[in-house]
Structure formats: C-alpha cells, structure tokens
Image (tube, rainbow, N blue to C red; front, side, top):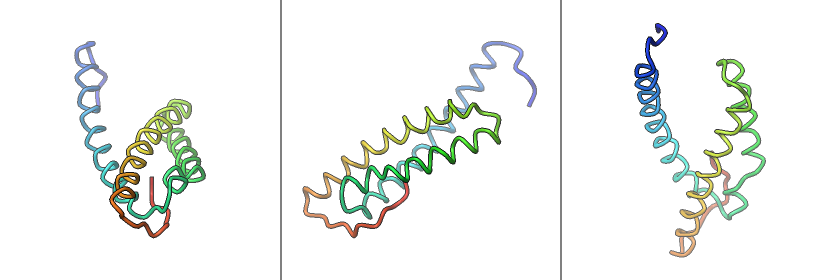
Length: 108
C-alpha cells in the first residue's frame, strides 16, 4: 500500500479501517452473547484470569504487528470492559427470566 498523499486520504483510510473494526466487533459481540449462556455467575462472566490471558496475547500480537503493546493493552482492556458489561446485562436478564447456566467458562 502506498503512503497517503494528503490528510483527506489518511482520514479516508482510517474511516475504512474503522468500518472493518465495527464489523469485527459485531462478530465478537455475537460470540460474547453466546458465551454468556455457558457461565454460571458474575465471577465467571468477569473471568479475571481469562482477561489477563487475552491482554497478554494482545500485547504479544501487537509486538509482531508493529503496534505499541501499551496501545494494544489499553484498547483490549476497554473493549473487554465494554463486553463484560454487555455480558453481565445478558446474564442478569437470563437469570431474572429463570434461565439456568451450566457453569462452563466461555470465551470473552
């Protein structure tokens, strides 16, 4: 890919990437919602050990991709926090409707 020749081109490329990121986040959200069905309680939803595994993997992938590991960590922690909030809401909604969970920890 050639270097952009104007600020407008930089912004257009960023906008295109943002569109791809939104699509990927929608895919991730669908999986998070499915994972909620396998979790027995809020601790399983929060899964602090799993969060740390995901963040560490993001930092390692960032180094390989030329992304600042600190930026990757900040983005992943914010993303995970937002998805945990969504999953907690789904979990609580299921619990209030009498839904039962089998207690397995799914993917975040």
